[in-house]
Length: 301
View 1: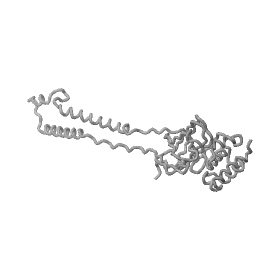
View 2: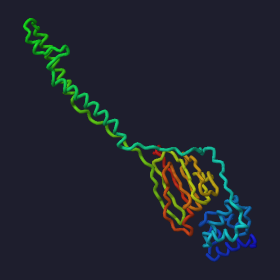
View 3: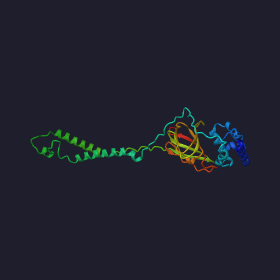
View 4: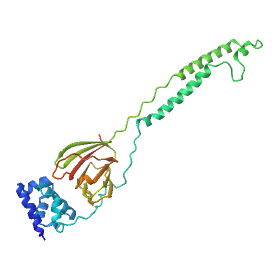
């Protein structure tokens, strides 16, 4: 069986063949130089944990051109086995179930306005109809019969008042027949947008705009290790997951979130119930991606 130091010697030899110094490899892998030295010396106890040992070895191997799957297979009895773990979230990070955001369509938003217009038009039509048929009064006696009866003398001042009242009623009816102006439609709600700023190898940088919350759901369809960090580089989630696993957490208020994914082909990420689309990149291992998202909230100037 291979000795533990042979794994480090193999990686070190590949690094030297590439012509990389430890400082250059640190820049490529984003792994501190002291951890790279520990890997070459086979001192995995000096790494932050078993999960990071496998993740760091994978990043090292990818950077120097050694297939990580082959390396893990040949040294599976020597490398620490990653255990699924999820660290306690920082006190200011609140975990909750994803909130379902239901947005009204434009058609649904103008239905109340249409109903109000139809109601007003129906009232105006009724008034117009009755004003066009004034042949009988409320007592059932026609106006012509009342005026033809010579037994009653109507004072001229009463006639004048009646004529004035009828003119006022006609003016009011004409005003009521005017169709009211429709109310302005409400402004549509802003939808969140993702904008890809740049890609560097398997590193991608996005900006997420027009959000009032940051709720994240991750669903797994196969094996993958992940690490999620907040804007203070604090670890929110870390572990190795498999088919059927699902995790969710609320990072509302954070200005940045970072996803370190071992296999994007087996991980679906939903941000505020919207499926995140991975960018097209061409690293040594296309399934490995390191995604940084800056957040711009609606209440920000």
